[in-house]
Image (cartoon, rainbow over all chains, first blue to last red; front, side, top):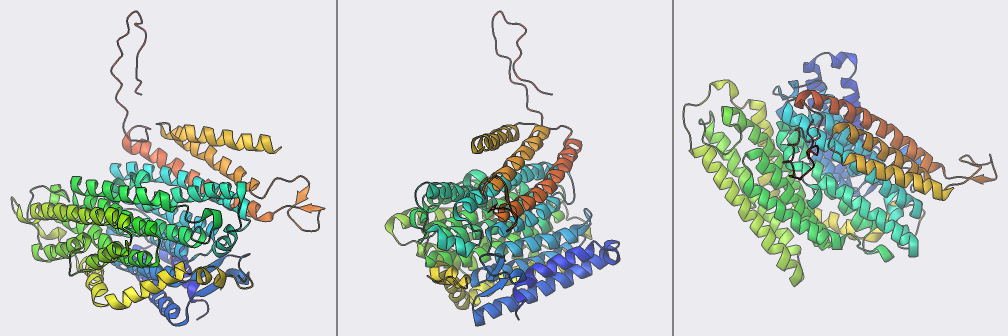
Length: 503
Length: 127
């Protein structure tokens, strides 16, 4: 279908807007029904889009039929559709979880959730760098409001930090875009990639500054080292469904880094070729290090998960730094895995916190669980996946990353750090799990706080995806390899998106 | 013209960065606003500064690039919405946390530095 590539943006937009109008705005029940229908429709249409891209190849959608590079183009390529499908799947599962009264903490949870999904999908699909900024703002303003959802002191405090940091980030983004437009005269990513190679002298220096500014912005979103301080507190203080949805937000930053620094400022950029690589190497390795330290030091499950998100961001940045098709393929596989696993862990942390009364998710002796077997099993799966132990997808993801480090110097840095970070996760999970599941005092709580069926389905849906990623590992790695080849093939990712421009 | 323009953008940015780094939410909000003004001017200049050049073809001898103007318009709208949001959030934080510091707590006054012959000097601040 011709218009399929805009559906992942239109469906949440329409649902979100409808929910603000009379028949839906009054009752939560109707909003919930529309939300479930909306996210399900989103999931189906993204799956169709994925199928179409696999069958027919990249689909270029010129909005308003303004031909690129003049108009805004949506690019449904193997990379963006994979991430759109991931976001839609995550949105659907998290929405199921949120239906259990997690959406009652404040007004407008459902419309905001939809706008957030719209922003995320739009950021993945767009082929125009200013449009990327606009979708960043859409997803950010929805996330600001979602973050304070439920209220309370720690949430307001972390939201203030998050909002201020991201507003500064948006300003930097615009400075970067201004410089890039001023020197290159275009905003279409494919056109930028074609034109950047011809820059020389002072213009090249200017564009270099712009590109570096963009790296700061994407690094802030992706929780790269000096800009990661907001993440643990923000994610740990958000309500469970919001934190679970935020698991994909750092990946938007990672995706933008891949898109901008592989396609635009990649091998073909003349004077500006691979300008991000010397920065990415140390920052990525240090991000893993600081994340690992955070993992060891975490006092509770939510903080632990948030720190693991930083570690996974670092691992993905390492892939961006290695800068090869194999590394990009590994990154795509690991990205899907780590998003799903950390999202499931955020939801599970909420279930655990509710059943332990005062102790919440902290690693201290407390009352026993109401449903110890089920929660313990789910926790074990999550932990195995996050650590990267053999039967689950984390293992394959990490193996792929390790294998993509080719030269001796790369291996010498990447192997120890990733393995030590896994070991740290293993230690932290064993320590936390032992305390939470085996050290009890008192009787279990009354049965008010047991996990409801919908919550179990939501977490189960996410957890089932992890072994499935192993069972269908061959197909998925073929797909990610394809997507990575596409991203690194300059003719496919730049010239083919510009009808009328030939090399 | 370019010199003055560049100077004003630079001054606005410098003031914005300085105020954003302050500890109280009000000055941070003002700093963010200044930064967004600087950004808007900067984006406008990315299409080059020209006199007597309309953004519509055929209205004047020269014409200027209309795209930066569209970008600035978008940036203004978004910046306005974000400023409105951060003002409300800062007020909410003031109500929830009981003070207007970005960190949510009043910094402890530093221990007074002992200085002979200067009894009026007090280090640190507080509220």
